[in-house]
Length: 492
Ligand code: NAD
Image 1 (cartoon, protein in one colour):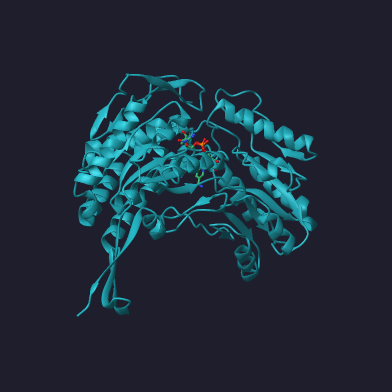
Image 2 (tube, protein in one colour; image 1 turned 30 degrees about the horizontal axis):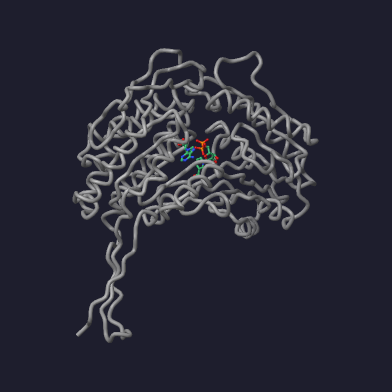
């Protein structure tokens, strides 16, 4: 386990300088695997946030950054090389402050997100920045019309703690590709991953001063300094739906553009024609393990055919018995710790609420025994859940799956769609056409059929309903950071 040895002491990145906060203050960074302080992070003041916005504003208004896609593509490629060179260091930081497993760092927690950089460098070069609409007879006579796409401006990127490298890069990289400048504010729990990104940008790339700024704070709502600042042109936010609402309210005064990636309570539907439930159970349980259940797009509601309910529960609980919680730095560990003690307490409260609502714990449902240091919880399956229960409606954000029986395909779709969220989902069935048709009826931004993986730099990701507004990654993820302008001049 990570002990209490001091971790790296990262600095803020403001207007091209790595610096301490204006009042010199720091706050402890707590390692989830040990529950101990592993080092400190700069605790930025309002003055620091304002300086970061001023730096980003200046770089946008007074440098060539927004107008030269070739320079931007080269800079993103340079950053890719630098991040690859620092991948081992980023892995250690991510294990230490997120509690991410080494296994997950070799995929979604560190290495997979780096694939975004070459994708967006290439897209910056191939993107149609200008489109001719040709000549038309207009109210004012014949006119030649064309469209130009250009950067929105200064972006405030506010991110959560669960998959910080992925989410920081999924905001910063497309924003840079578009020609925006950025102030990145990570969650208080995971400052180092963002600050390390800032340091690598500063020390190893030619990205001009002020184009990327990184400010960490112990105060979650310090993000308001950004969302209420009229010099910010766009807020790119990932976090809970509750905070997303606050962000939107704060942006309303200056009508700042908001892009929101919020919560989810996605369903996995296992159809009754499956030979067995092994693949469906593996998708649910291994997905859960990757981020200890702290993932917005995980399939956490298992919809099992009533006629084969016990068989489905058995497949899932047997899979869970192979994923005990363990030291995240051990390459063999699949399930690491939760982010904090308060998250463990919250997960346990949800499990207790399910029991008092009449549900049944099939396995787990408690902290490890004998106790482990740090913030661990056993993988948990809750059966006999009704979709109206709190555990079926709210994000638990821990290693907990709830199993709900259904009667027929229409019933399964109704349950899947009976949620304020619409982020993701999965269907498993022997008949792929039936499974695909059913997947289309579930109103979410992404769907997996028979284990197909949608995650990738070219695949847009984002939710329906209260899961958010807008799309991250892919071409759509670049377009979020662009304004479209239309021009016309008289045609002779
Ligand atoms: P959170 O909403 O508590 O915090 C997210 C970020 O917002 C943090 O940086 C926090 O400091 C900041 N913040 C808090 N209050 C703020 C305010 N008033 N104004 C501006 N910023 C503020 O979320 P979290 O607990 O860090 O992350 C977990 C949540 O994130 C879950 O709900 C999860 O589903 C969601 N999430 C969504 C996606 C997605 O892509 N849809 C991805 C990952 C996580």
